[in-house]
Amino acid sequence: MLMSLSGSRVSSLSSTMKKSATSTTKNLNIHWFRHQDLRLHDNPALCRTVQDSTTDGSSSVLPIFCVDPRFVGGETVTPFGSVKCGSARAKFILESVEDLRRNLEGRGSGLVVAYGKSEDVFADLLRSFNGSNEGGDGSSSRWTVNVFCQREVASEELKVDRALERVLEAHGNGGVLNTIWGSTLYDPDDLPFEGSQGMPDVFTPFRNKVEKKCEIGLPLPIPSKSSLSLPKDDVILSNLKEESSNSVRRCSLTYMPTLDELSYTAEQIDAAADDPRGVMTFRGGETAGRYRVQDYIFDRDLLKTYFDTRNGMLGGDYSTKFSPWLAHGCISPRYVAQQCRRYEEERGISNKSTYWVVFELLWRDFFKFFADKHGDSIFSLEGTLGEEARGSHPNSRRWGLNRKHLELWKEGKTGYPLVDANMRELAATGFMSNRGRQNVASFLAIDMNTDWRYGADHFEMHLLDYDVYSNWGNWCAAAGMTGGRLNRFNTVKQSKDYDARGDYIRHWCPELGDLPTSLVHEPWQMSKDQQKEFGVRLGVDYPNPLISPRGPNTYSGPRNGKENGNGDKGKRRNGGKQGRGGGGRRGDDRRRGQR
Image (cartoon, rainbow, N blue to C red; front, top):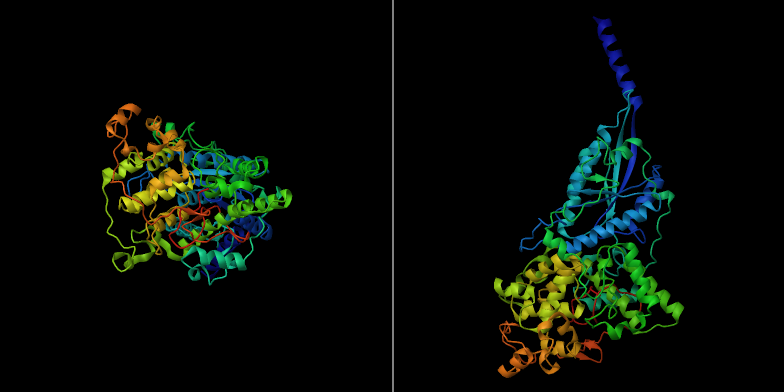
């Protein structure tokens, strides 16, 4: 009895020792590219992935991008009724991912592209790696999986982060999700405040302190080829081939979804094609983004006159048009700032224009830090005002929602030519000038007294350069729901100031093409005889005004190049982000970040 028990114990111990001796734990470092960092240059999260891979001895990185149907896809509809990501932006994203894969492959690496919820993709991948990793001799290896990605602060992205953390926890072996700050000129730790919670809620004091006390860091270099090597494990590499029996469906080093696979209709796919009326052709990707920076700043030498041309609306040269590539992280703001400094040094030109491009980049920083501070309040009807917006604050109002009028605004049929031209351009091309964005936002929220979130939601669907922080922060401010002075734009005066000859209006509202300049901004001024003379019948060929035309309002127009006389003259050249406008009091010229 004793011998039997002893023998049993010895046998058991022997099996345990054999299993222990043939089981190994390996490190697997995954870099998770998100929609906001689709580049190799100046990518802090990617550099951190490489650094940790060198430190832990794995010396390899597995890059992955998930096309998450919660963020991209024709069947994902927002609470406001819009497709969350329109087909044109989805096309730009796919082009950016394809370019990222090519650039990684050119450095001896690759990019796993997957379709599905990010946390589900990771869970399936980890199961496939471990489930098929047992050798014929019974040996096996389990992976300590560490995931690295850019840190985002909006609630939908944070929800995905938490779900992925649960997946890694369930997988075991101590793997963690590492989020690294990126996409801004300045890191949070560099700000002269006690974190984002201590930052001012008004741009100008934020800007003044940052420019005075902070320096823009140099862009980080692209990691070396050797540091980006894919894992050499045969099981992992085999499972990342589409033809492998153990591979995860729609997840491999060669897979790339189509717009059709992402559930966009044939009509939506056709709408994503380039419209010849647009300001320029936008191609997604780091390669195209860096080419645009080189072309605009150096090859065409347009930087030196940017301040004077930035309020244009027609053509490709009035502004940088960097915003779509900035929004998706195809180029970094620090890279743009560096190129502006390089231009000043090489060309010997340092003026308001060379400063202003960088200054506007600071608006993007401001809105990301602002979102980090205020959380979901930037998405609420009362904004960051909260209870104050219900009567105690001067900007308080009782919001309305006339769905018929909302649709007319979306379709560019309000009867106000400047508004209509801009809304038609947005629908056709996914782009709108900063000047246009300020006017259409003011018109919807203030003149039409419409729940401003429907406007922000519409922009989210259509904009190629959609950025959650700049878009929702700007709309919240345009509606007066971040406090400060409410800035109501006089669209007729703006039209005459910034499209003096009516060329932009005629371009997007061809039915007004034969109207003289004296009438093209205010077609409702036509008499019956003039309507007949110019071939435009109000209410038939072109809409009657949706709301009654009004006289001059509190907006007094540009003064010596300063919006509303706010006094932001661009004295320093130390800060900025691809934003828009001239700073000033909160509520002044606030649709920033879309140049």
